[in-house]
Amino acid sequence: MLNYIVKRLLLAVPTLLGVITLLFFIIRLAPGDPVLYILGDMATPERVAALRKELGLDKPLIVQYIDFMSKALRGDFGKSFNNGMPAMERVLSSFPYTLELAIFGTIIAIILGLGIGILAAINRNSWIDLLSTTIVILIASMPIFWLAILLMDFLSVQLGIFPVQGIGDLENPISVLWHLFLPAMTLGLGMSATIARMTRSSLLEVLNEDFVRTAWSKGASKYVVIFKHALRNALIPVVTIIGLNFGYLLGGTVLLESVFSRPGLGTLLIEAVYARDYPQIQASVFFFSLVFIIVNIGVDILYSFLDPRIKLR
Image (cartoon, rainbow, N blue to C red; front, side, top):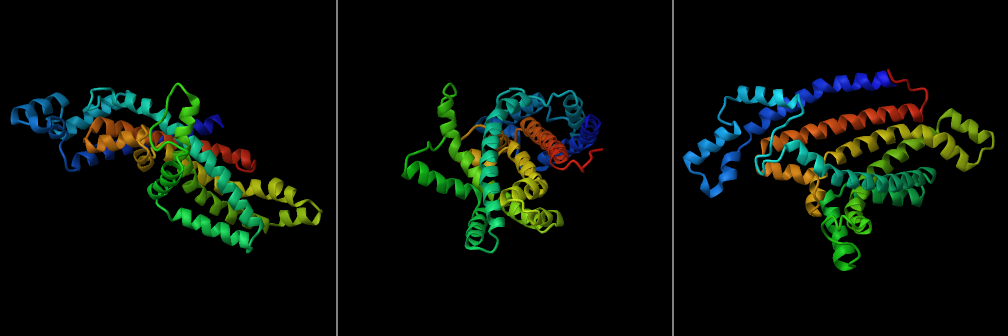
């Protein structure tokens, strides 16, 4: 297992180098000048030239790239153009807000998705299956920002149960959870639709396997057949979906954090893109990529626990 993890991490190095290399050149090809954004109405030719030299943007592009890579390999992604703070330090300070949202949203998605998927599979072609499938399709086809606005309007504006925006009082755990519930529920509902569909199709496929028929013929109860024999074997593709979605959420729930005015990696990246803050964009995307790779390795390891026949090499 340890050899497999080390091997995967070593293979991730050229991937990360490729990501930040492409990103370095792509963001500089995008329209907009960070110097003009910073100076605003004070952008005289003299000030522009002085600031460009201070930020190192007056050097040839290849020289900028070499300087960037030599520092990035040491973990230094430079300082934000906006506030002068180390870019990676801002990423790490924003990550806990995105992490808690991703964890709670995923927990809600797993509970709802597995429950609906199992219920639909064991009641195949019944009104329960039809109703649950219809609901899942409606939720899956609904944009996440639109779902957030609907829940916000109903639960916050109309009923006044949950706060509309913010993260609450950090010294009061109840306040933090109360502010977290609505965005986490929005994430969970959107993600649960995909999990439910995958659970239903995977479980139906496993229920037609010979070992399941054998369990039925031996007189095993419905609970034992479904939850002990069938579900565990049906979970592998479901775990893949959960892992990929969780990695995506850890990369920053951009739209959701904006709608609910929550600090996090998504909000940080949007601000950096608008400001053409090159160091902040590079540090954020590098961190997104690293987290996604680590989550994928974790999902592969989980496969071997779900199915001992899978050997990691």
